[in-house]
Image 1 (cartoon, helix red, strand yellow):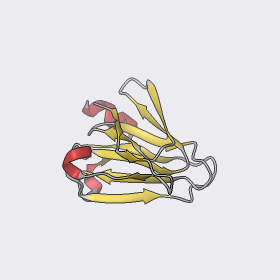
Image 2 (image 1 turned 60 degrees about the vertical axis):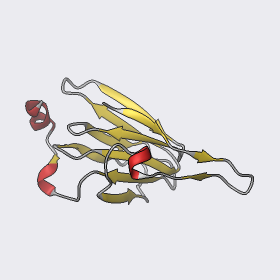
Image 3 (image 1 turned 180 degrees about the vertical axis):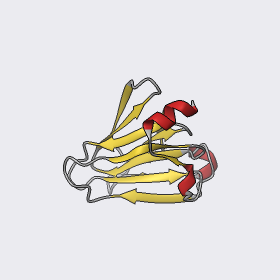
Length: 130
């Protein structure tokens, strides 16, 4: 089930700190971490689903929208703009990311190492697998 995760936020006048730990804050063991940055205005990232991979996406800097589409084409939009919130995406969740602010930095925590065959890039194929 999709859900927003709230990560710990330690407030300090010198600057705030947020952290995460596998078993305490993320619903899977992290096997891969990647990030996107320098996304040109108007571009989209993603546009796929995973067969088995789980993912948490965090806006470390700036903001962006994650648009999740169900099998009948209905969209749900999640706007991320705080580094202490992450969106959990279970397997078989179609998504793309858009509306990146200047200097947006998205952090992706994955339950699997990169495996090309786990990706579903065609929405019709995605719908047929549900």
